[in-house]
Image: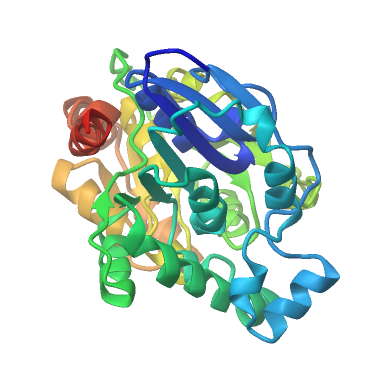
Length: 387
C-alpha cells in the first residue's frame, strides 16, 4: 500500500452495512483517510477496502476450549480466541496493512479490544464502546457468569491504553470513569442532519411509529398491548429488524397485535432512509423498561432518528432520553413503565401538542445532529492523525 492518505483500520464484529453507528463512524473516518473495515456483511459505504468475516463465526470465546478458559478466569489466555477473531488473525494478509503500519485502529465494542490492539501494533487505538460492556447481556445467566468477567478484564487491560475512548450517553461515560478510571468522551448516536419539513397534523388522529430491532427485553410486547388499549384515533406502525433469534420474537409481536388493523408491521428501512420514512408520522414511541444498566441509560439511534424526522416522542422515564427530551421540549414522558401509565401518558394528547413537539424537533435537529454532536471527537481524531 503506497497511498499518502492516512490509513485507518476499523474493526466491528457486526453486519456493518446495517450498523448505523459504525456507518456514521466510517463516514467520519473516510473524510480523514482511507478506511479498511473488518466485519460481517458486504462492503459498507465509505470503506476503501473491506475484509468480510464469514457469517456464523461467533464473536466471543464460545468454543469448548474458550468456555473452559472463561470458566477458570484464564482471561489473558482467552484473548483473541473467538472464532471471528481467530479468522481475522489468520487472514491478516487480506487487510493489506501499510508498510509503515496503520495510522489509526478503531475497535468497536469491548469484545474486539484485544484484536484491535493486536492488529494495531504501535498505532493509536480509538475504542468506541456502544454500551456499558460489563453488563451487555447480564440478564442471561451464562453470560453473567462467564462473559461479564472477561469484559471487565478487557476493559481493565486495554481502555487505559487507548488514545481515545468514546461511548453513547452521559451515564455510561460516568460508569467507565468510576469503574475503570477512563476519561471517556461522549459520542451520542446522533444521525446526520437532514433537511425535512415539519408535516403538521390536521385531524384528531395521532399516527405513532417505532423503529428498531425485534429483540426481547425491550418492552415491545407492552407497547403493542398499550396500543390495543388506546382509543381508535391512535395507530402504531412498526419498522422492525429481525433479531438473531431468526425472527421468533417478531412473530410473537405479530401474534400480540393480531386482529387490530391500526397496528401495522413494515419491512425495515435502511438507516439513511429512515428519517424520511418516519417523517410521515406524528410521534416516535420507545418505552424500554430499565431491566439492566444499558436499558436504564439508553440513548438510542431511534431517539435521534425521530428528531431528524421532525416528529414528537412518547417515552418512558429513561433518564438519558428524558434529559434530552425535556431540554428541547420534544414530547411526553410516562410516570412509569407500567402499561396503564403508558396509556395514561398518551390518551389525552391533542393535535396541538403533537404539532408543538414536531416544531421543537425541527429546532433541535441541528444541535442533535451527528456533525454537531461529534465535533469534539473529530477534532481529537484530526490531532491524532496529524502526529
